[in-house]
Image (tube, rainbow, N blue to C red; front, side):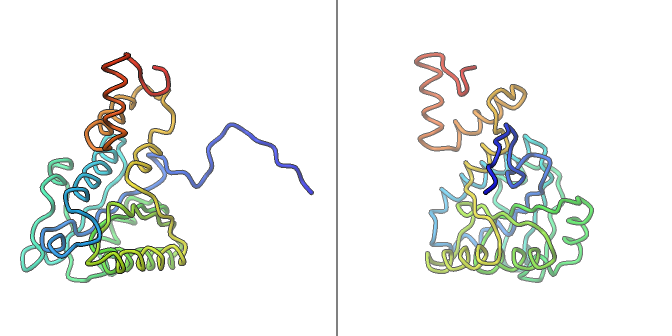
Length: 220
């Protein structure tokens, strides 16, 4: 039996700002109206968290909508505010992966690891996730930044994607994995600032520790 030797390096499966692209799919009003698996305020908060994290860490981001002008409506307003002037790819296909302009953008970015979130989990997320995996991409799904018409629909969709090889993560996990080391001072303020605003009790804890004791994550 071979004995493993530990080394102080991160695992290759961990996310970093440079090893993936974030694809945000169909965060639109019409899709949100029927979403029941997550409270819409909580969903919008989580979407803001991951979007601000990606923008701050300079992760390449793809924004997509489906039938924006004819049915589904505009993006959640926080996304154009976080990514001002960025192109939004509007599609007719329910499966983002079947849209040629989106695929051209994925190929232009050139990342083999994709992190995906959007509405609805069982349609707009399952389609590109399974398609990308079949074509050799690594896919991570931010499950608490996705939603569906019922808990059952969301959960079965996540199970289906995981069985196909997708990796489920959460919004706070995504942000903290981008930071990963509190000694990275250039993004320390960015990460803790986003957490204070969007990470619920954890964010309040950061605010409390700083205000009461002058304490910071990692002893800074």
